[in-house]
Length: 148
Image 1 (cartoon, one colour):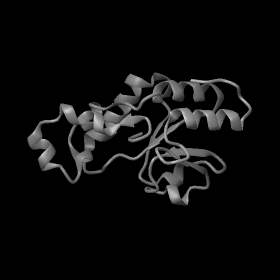
Image 2: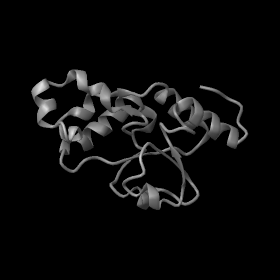
Image 3: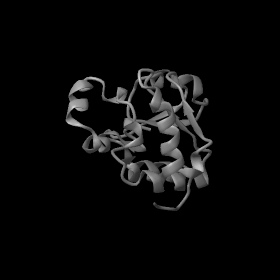
Image 4: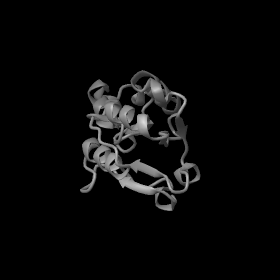
């Protein structure tokens, strides 16, 4: 979710400076931080469009040092992507959840992505810098003529 659907940095203005300093090396361990985040540009529209054509799930990790992250991520999905509230999978081992021959969109190579037997769209990088390029690629690949 973070860095793909969710703009992690968008929570920072809501945080007290003392908290930011205390957790500067592990911002994702701040209690409640995931409830403060906003969607990435075009993330919601893109997910909804792709869901019309593909069997979409949200596969995300949640830090073990922050118990609220697990529930906050579910609340975030219910708030911004109600169509996906029963399609959220939280796991630190993404390769165990990714289906063979599927496509996984992730901004990192960690948490099992490198072991996935799935096509990895490396979000936020040169080939897929934003949702427009991801959606265009996926729809074109399937011969679907639709845009966000």
